Image (cartoon, helix red, strand yellow):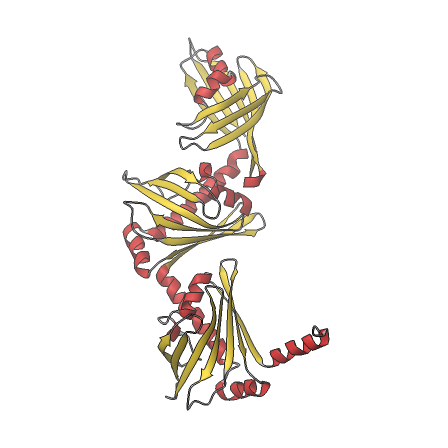
Length: 431
């Protein structure tokens, strides 16, 4: 028969009576925390309570593998330890059994450690289960088993901080824009190309498939004319909260790998962004910082993103452009209203317009599908609100893509004035 509810509750309570549970959240990625827990290079820096040092003699992290270590107390006494791994699920879970060594007064216990992602941080839960309540109480009284693990978890935090200082670059910035928009600007190649990279750089996005396993390829053009080719693989895409991607060197580029985690934390109408670059080694981090000033480059890149977002916010403000064109007014008017002419010049340099549909009358619709040199397409829709041939054109243009966080509409007023024989003064007001 299945156990009754009261029996199940009693069993759980009995387990709780025999167990110590400790929880800690670390500001470090899951894989790094697991590595600190299982790498004999790191373990001696944190195992044991305050004042202890540790020597690892053996550490074979696999089911059935043995972990032997000696903890050296501040009073000079040595405590020899042996554990056998029962379960290893990298980087999510460890289970091992602590077995007292001969001559050491201690108690056998089973330890389970779970590692859970918590928005880019890692939540660790340690459960130490003793055979009896009395043995748990003895370990608390004689070995500090209720306090020493807390101190060890604090020492883990210190070791992670040291590692991150050696292997990580971290950037923070608050943007006056909602998280959905900041995320969209980070993942839309039309926008990203306008702000990516340090001051003086331009960027060509060749491919950007924003999904787990998708590829992002771009070339950054330095002020000195040098090109920097980048190939990136998306690992996690949690729109609009989190991106994780890994840089993999292109042939002929610098042989440095690193993983980037970007979090977009919503703060009402603002976004608190954190970008973490985690390198394979401290040497790789130092190389990019010393050779390419990657620390300053990251700050400048986020500053350019802030400026781009501010420019988007300013799109609703009044901007005026003036130009004198060496062409008669009727021809200039036709260039703005005849789709066969408009398709030849609309959009940034290098763009084409495979779709250009224009109904040049009050209330008439506009649909233009722009295509970048890399093959990406950007639809623009609008409508005419006023047509006075050949002197005035008023139309609305915009983007309505709520799935990407991009929604805006601009009012455009084109005024054409004769400025002499076969010359036209054009005024474009945008608001």
